[in-house]
Image (cartoon, rainbow, N blue to C red; front, side, top):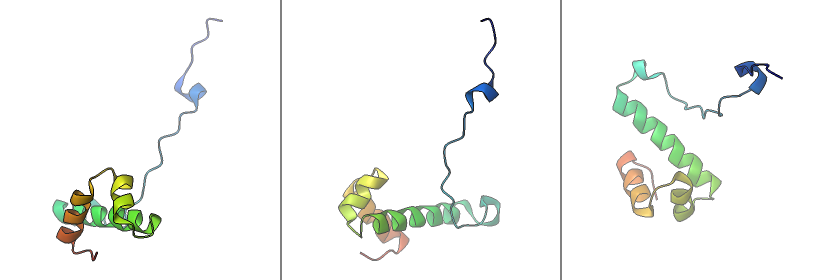
Length: 78
């Protein structure tokens, strides 16, 4: 009793980070970097849902219309 709990005692691990297959932000214009990250996230969601766009939108936390707009803007086929 009376002992102080330290950060090491809690053994906190940072949440997993999804790697983006894109160069670090300093090597691309910001919008291009963000587009690549968004394109990859959409493609992964579509693969996980067997290309069910409604389920992919739900997985990404966006509406179906928003997903459709983003896919069109990024040049992803339906």
